[in-house]
Image (cartoon, rainbow, N blue to C red):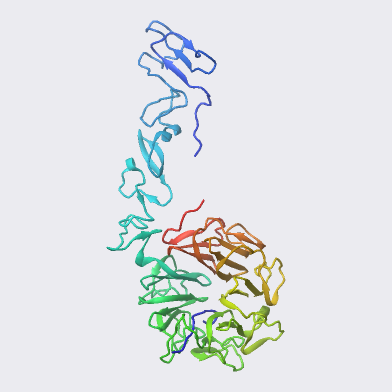
Length: 497
């Protein structure tokens, strides 16, 4: 059995009243104006003990007038505070609707909005927003969705619907559910959503024909999925042979990658194969590079013990079992990591100083690399114009530099995007450095926490922002120019302070 990985690049409310601080009571059965026994008592304005007495009030105050309390209005169709208005804004404050904010309309308390992830599924405002969509078995995620018998609902997802993997490309994203289905959303001009059309949509929809996926990777305008059987399928743009099916014909449905009967696994040590555009020698087969399509996979020279691979535009790297990182292809921005000024390298060579690497972050749309070693230290190299290397500077580096400002934290995952690096911590927090997506325009050379994200297991940068896989299997994403928080895409992410 040969082993390999998918890594895609070019190739693969305040209430208001009259403003009185004391209550004022109008009593039609008394005949005086009483300011109370002391300065703190209520002001009582009496309309006279009988109909013949006159306190000089407007004729609107007659013998039928009930007691009025200025500043107090109830949702009952009456002018409780005698200000000439009925059921105005303060009235809703007396509407106690569970898990909801209220409004008063036609003497009735109605739901203005549900709080958190609660919903009014029975249409009865009297019991407010009665359903918690994050945990209700019969109304999981939406009022119309029921989990199968034996399944539980958490974060708005039934057991079989939880997400186990997520990936983002230039302008699309995909996720793998527990049941093996792949769901995609975003740009679809090349058929990269895999639904048989080239119609884009921002609501996740299933890829046709895939029921046993264990991993998914999004390239620029194409996508690949690893099946539980060890087979690999791809779909989308194929102009340079990115799909690996032996053709350069794009397709909006999955096709098999031609691996000659060999199987792919994400959990073993083995060789690496590449296909697509031979850009800068990124295929690693040793032949002189040229911008031509390579529609069938070729073996990377000399690598037999890779545990992870990564791909950029024209550059590829692999983490070996020994902890060494080797790269090949284009040396644009020093991505080969060896400090050389060579234009490219046709076969794999070692990255300087890295001997204990365990994880590698790459992205076709990125111009820098990141590696996590077995001590939890983060190393980066490449372009640094926005401070994405996290070393406190904006100076590019052709060799790995240590990311600063992470003492005392435990990094769980790392991802690279356009001018930015992202990490998730064991606490479920997400930090990023470089270009801002969540908190405004510009960039920073120091690590910044992404607001409103909780329980993050993994963060996946893409061309439109970043997506987060939460610990309970839901996915939320933030897209430029949405600067303040991520929004739910699949399931309902945990709410934070």
